[in-house]
Amino acid sequence: MQLKNEEISSALKQKIEDISGTNVMKCYQCGKCSAGCPMVDYMEILPHQILRLVQIGTWEEVAGANTPWICAACLTCSVRCPRGVKIAELIEAVRQIALRNRISGRRLEISKEEIENLPPIALISAFRKIIE
Amino acid sequence: MHFEESAIESFRALGIELEELPRWNCCGTVFSFATDNVMYHLAPVRNLLRVREQGKDTVLTLCSMCFNTLKRANKLFNEDAEKRDKITGIMDNENLVYDGKTQVKHALEILRDEVGLQSLREKVGQGLKGLCLAPYYGCMLLRPDGLGIDDAENPTLFQDVLRALGAEAASYPFQGECCGAYQTVMQPEVVGERTYVLVDGARRSGADAIVVSCPLCAFNLDQRQGIAGRLHSDFDAMPVFYITECLHLALGLGFKEEWKRLHHVPVDAFLEKLHRSQNVAGAVKRQRSNIRE
Image (tube, each protein chain N blue to C red):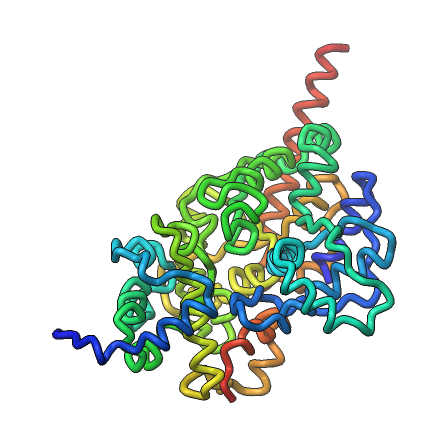
């Protein structure tokens, strides 16, 4: 892939860095985050790939992937990153931007009966990802 | 609920009286990472203020998610002056201004720091001898590093507590791996897969049961074993206990009949095994004292 400078959305990269409080350019793509991620089997794009896409500012692929919604923010990646990049926080920033701008998010498509069988702790935390 | 009841009764037996915090509210369950929005921090900070209103300085949480949310909000409040002022400004309808001095401790830390593991061991005696338990830390007791109850990658506190209760602590690689948390709402099958991996790992290490410290882990690892069983024909169910239930059992306070109904995977075989090993231990003790006499 050839990357032209004018295609890079640095404003978006800046926004993600502001919300997450992390410097995405510190990542050197070692892949340790993806290697240790317990949810990686279900992700369309792996955590280290999300980082790379944010570095080069290709928002569509980041926002279109299921990755931010599969991430359970368990923080394993953030704890293990040899560069101190807060990956879980960065993915939360992606979710925040997607939800605030109504680009993507989870929908609560479960029956009333299923909801009644779930503990409040599960529902309240899941609401953080729901767009409608 | 069995978590609370077993905690109150066990800590009372250990000389610690737990009092429910008046006017507590839900902490929001997950600590908000977004640096540009303080609204999510109001719920945990309100709880921390309620503790000070009572003239107390420590809040005990039974839940790992509450522990994490309250502790991180507290750290943020104490270390980020700008956010502290903002939060205090929004909370101007409170009678007291929060001073940042509430200590947040998980029940496991209270066992280590207030009760002391040596003194716990002495009070327990035989306890859960003969049983092997797999500790499950999950995420929120350990991460981020430096904020958890122990080392994020190689924790030992849970094992130490289980050993103090007389049990053998299983060693397996999944003790701090995420159970899938609230994915259980929208994608229960993902959590079913996680549960399969975690329970299978605990089984291979020789455990009789898994012990958890978070109600969401408890729900996932116990209730989602139904899905794990449907997805994998070789799946073997394993009972899941809350740490305070084990504490209650180890202190000789028993296991209430009504708690059994709150478990998805039946606990009878486990309790039966405990009963048998206690009888054996009792018999050996009697024999020894007979010989001495």
